[in-house]
Length: 219
Image 1 (cartoon, one colour):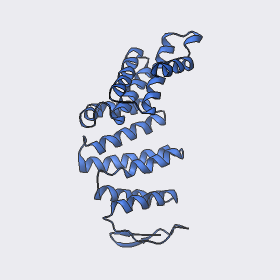
Image 2 (tube, rainbow, N blue to C red):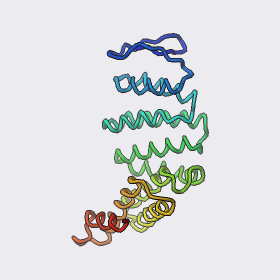
Image 3 (cartoon, rainbow, N blue to C red):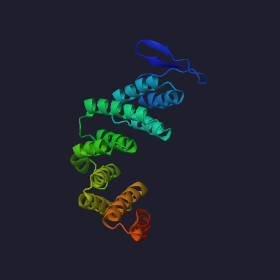
């Protein structure tokens, strides 16, 4: 397997992949080949091509795409590595408040939450939430996801009132601006169910029963 590098043609010898040459300025080709290389187990080479894609077109979400595939494979550590590298490069070229940068922040926060590092995820979201609201809008899925991560962290700390208020407000915003995405609806409902089950510990107020009731209330 070959791709065009600054120092000429580089051979990664990936079995079963056709030989080709990529111009370094073509970010779409770099993105595509980064995905192929990562799937073939050549992660470092994939990251190098993804870096070139970002350098030629900083708004591209190539690292989020690669990280999403890694998350599906259960490889959260590599997914986090990719997202942090992509965020670093985007911040250098676009500044901290560009929409593409904020989208990557949101993806990294979701990755951290998926790993059980909820406090880190919430802290990252809190740092960028004002910019998300201003640049992406209150009802943008990235903004809503950040608000719900912060709400989940509040619930985990035992601050049930803050968690309930934040989750309910996020769900209300989503409903007012249009039909909420499935992820927003489910995450908000689960947080509200957890909070209310803590407030009412009887069997009838179990998280499972409350999720069912809250989902029925939405219809």
